[in-house]
Structures are given as C-alpha cells and as structure tokens.
Amino acid sequence: MRNVLDNELRAIHVDIIKMGTLIERTIDETIKALVNQDVILAKKVDEGDDRFDQMEIEIGSKCVNLIATQQPVASDLRKIFSIVKIVTDLERIADHCQDISKLTLNLAGKKYVKPLIDIPQMGKQVKEMVKMTIDCYIDQDVEKSKLVCATDDIVDKYFYTIVSDLQSIMKEKPEEIGQCVDFLMIAKYLERMADHATNVAEWVIYSVEGVRFDGN
Image (tube, rainbow, N blue to C red; front, side, top):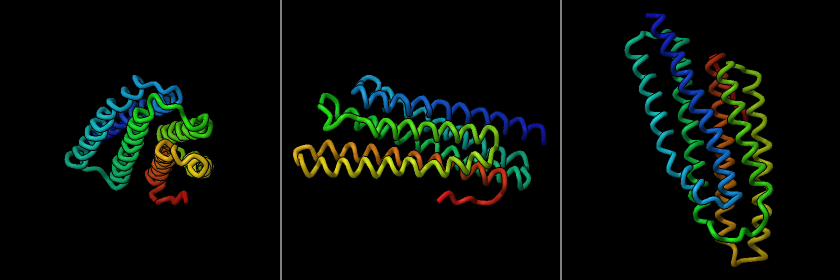
C-alpha cells in the first residue's frame, strides 16, 4: 500500500509541475497580448482558462482518493493538504491571467494613455516569482521559498508606482479615466498573482516543516 501511495504522490507531483509550467507560459502570453494589443493572443488566454479549472479538479480528486483509499500517515496528510492549497493558488493565478486578457480585449484599438513600461516589468517579476515557486516545490526548498516571500515587496513597489502614475494621468486627462481604471485593475490582478505565488511558497514551507510561515 505504501508503494501505491508514493507512486500516486509522484504522479500528482508531475501534474503540479505541468500546471505551473503552463501558467508561466500563460503569464508571458498575457503580458505580450497587452503590450502588443494582440487580440488573438488575448482571446487564446481568455478561452484557455478552462484547462486550469480542469487541472485543479483532477488533482483535487486524486488527493481525495488518496486519503480515502491509502491510509496516509500524518506527514502524508500534511503533504496532500499542501498540494490542494498550492493547486488552488495556481488556479487563481490563471484566473487573473484571464481577467487581464478580458481587459486587454476591452482596450483593443485604443491608444494607450502612456507607454507601458512598469506593467510589463511587473508582469515579468510575477512570472519569475511563479517560476521560483515551482522550483521550490520541485526541490522542497524552504530557503528559496522564503526568498519568494521577500520578493513580493518588489511587486508591491511596482504596484504603488503604477497607481501613482495613473492617478496623475486621471487628474490631467479626466477623459481617460476609463482606460486608467482598466490599467489599475490590471496592476491589481498582477499584485494578487504575486500574493498567490507567495502563498504557494508558504505552503511548500508548511509541507516540509509542518509549520505555517507568514511571509508578511
């Protein structure tokens, strides 16, 4: 029975790596679509969100089945619980990619109120955080997980800079408030994605050490 449990956990491990890698690519596509006003790519991201929902359901079902049939011990239960939480946060990141893509479609054909500099850089930082969290999960690396949590501050700084810039534009060009609000939402979604990446890192630490780490 122990061999079956270990094999199933390894299979789930592979599933999470696949999901994380696909999300990394989706973040790239999301930012590329926004910067280039690429409607086709934005639609691809928007319409592709269902696959992440399905991945979350499938991995969750495998975890429930393990608990029901394989009599996992306490350390196994901690690992399985962490997996469920990690997958939920990864799926939320994918949801926010879809949210940004919908706003990209809303902005299609409009001249942007300012060149996009900070938002793409913020997106790049978020993608790097997600990549780091997947590496942390693969290696079960506690120290790197703590580094991911600290990196969230960089994303927060981008967020506050973007908010400040957009507030200034709205004062100077009230006719552009609608577009500025869209960009504010995009920045907020990226900030939330970083928060979810931080959550993943914290769940890796819990999986390894059995204690909750508060990255804040």
